[in-house]
Image 1: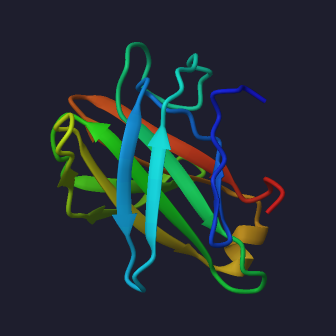
Image 2: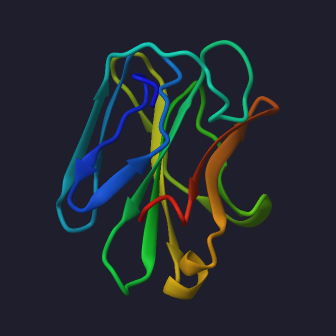
Length: 154
């Protein structure tokens, strides 16, 4: 396991295969029930193919997975470090685009980078199919996305 990988255990969620794209990322997200998730990353890591975009620094994409047995799995995608607000957050299942959703982007006061979240619901049957789910966005002809496999010990 690469030391740059970050695993966040928070309210029964697990951040899967996340690599920060910039040396320092800091943002917070508030959810409908008043829960606030704070993310602060001050590590620098090497690219190991977890993101589709190649070379240089760029946005970070992280996927949190709910772990409530028997219930639909909620995949929460945290996107940060974008230079401009992207129109849509995209979701793929086994490399096939299945949905895109317009979201509100928040601009950081510190560096001016944009961040947002998107939620995708997966039924227990679809989760058991051992599919690969991806979340991401396209900016300036680059695809930034992160995957989570339904068989990753969840």
